[in-house]
Length: 350
Image (cartoon, rainbow, N blue to C red; front, side):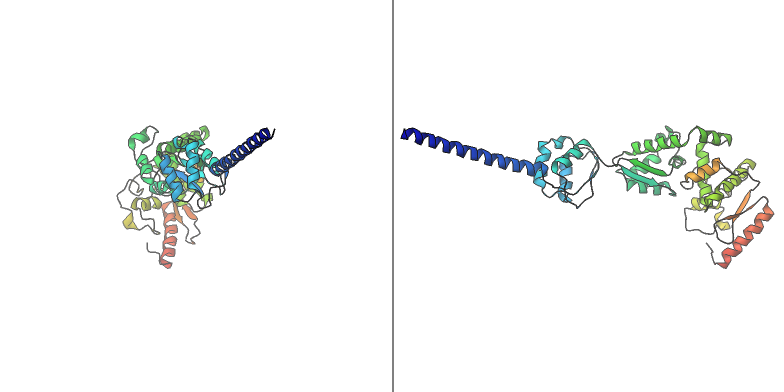
């Protein structure tokens, strides 16, 4: 009996030791599992993680290490490997939150759940200004964007030329993904352009015997001339009168654009002979492209222009930003003299 009790006692001890070992191993495994997947790991050092197109897992891991995006890079790497993220890398701009776990971060990255970019633009003067601004918001650089906007072959598919393609970009606020290609970005902008030029606006343009592109080019001149939106329809009507009469538009902002000297405050006679298709003192009709990105208000002002007999205008001598309008050259010269005298009094020579 004594021997049997001894054997049973020994067996019980062994079972207890085994149970303890199992619990210890289980505890270690649970702790390791927690550290790998569920322990808060993302730091507050970066608001976003940018993953470039064609980036490998090694590229992503390098960025995470160098920017201190996680506290424990070893646990992130182990989780990424076990969750097969190394083969599921997707480009994009990903919003980071302090305290995110490896599991949550990796699921977000692997699913491509990136945060859309808010892109708002208006009144940008040149294509170069525009692509430089956009390149700060999305992945493609300004060179690749401008190359597309200067490609005659590419633009022809959409009915534009390098000169007039800038008319396609309608000022607005857009949501799009950071990792757009230049082609996808262009397609998105063209889709909005098509929506903007609905049947009503197209008909209004057709009634004026102008295309949407021509309306936008004229709107760019109107917008450059008008400091106050309420004058836009009158200015648009004036220029349409000149176009109908076969007169040169003689718009000072077109000369400034041709010279690419946007510091000019006074358009002198010597500037008027500058040889450029954008100089409307030399050439009759509209220039080949817009001289700035016109506002929607300016486009609609052209489409809903105010009818009048005005064919001349000159900035008011009070520098209010308003204009004196005239139906004949004699009255216009009186207005012009008052403005030139006001410039002289303020010593504005250029």
